[in-house]
Image 1: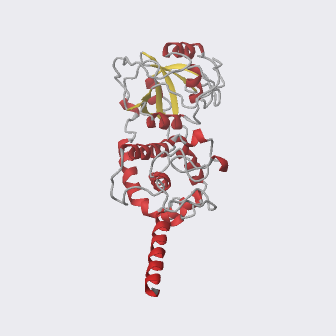
Image 2: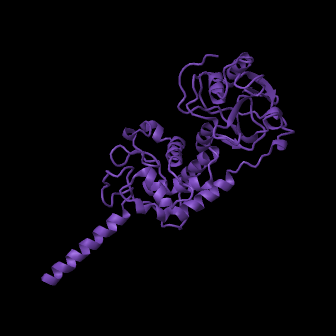
Image 3: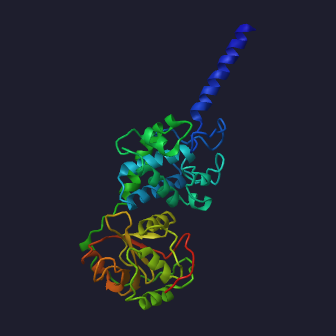
Length: 337
């Protein structure tokens, strides 16, 4: 009996240790995850590469947000590894305490609202905000950096996902690369005839008319995303930058990367080499409405009608990302134009 009791105790101890190793970390050190709770253990062995369409899509969204913010690939690898550990790359509507989303971020800890944190692009952006505040994040071990952001009760758990995260990010980074150069945007052809499957306060024709009425207005300096949103009837776009807007629409499947035949009313997105990016409203016949492009002095923020070539081969020489349907997740208010 004594030997049987010792054996049983040993088996229970071994089981407890296995459970502790499998439990996913929580967003802060005070969290206590339920041991071996369903859905908290990342699915798929490290390096196995068996990811669902949803998981791959979420990894691509996290990666695209990094690209849009001109962050190095290493940032996306860290973010995807964290998301694998925290949510198995599934956009969870629940978690420990009030944790939600891919990164299990908590509204009560100032990460954002529940609605925002279940938006993969927004959640990734908030993760990168915190990541960039970590000293030496680019050269430190992944687990150390991830723990500095997440403050998990199980900091050692992140390291094992570095290899599969690297594979997911590498695939997404390659397929999402911006390869168009300034000189490639010539000979566009006929405008595409596309019916947008989105709803806005104004139709594309009404948005184009509003943009034309706004020509000559000033005060739009570095407010390109707000301008296209106002053309469509909103006061704000719901995104902080054009790059964030592009990443969110790409995550929703509403973008056409490197497609040079947008329909009138489409949003044209550009890589500026900086964190914000640029977006303009396509009016048709190779014309776009854009802020800042013809300013007479820095900061004027004047709305102008220009040819598409003026953005890619003129003074700015931007890199064209592609076009997107005029969708504005989280937009609100009423336009002033």
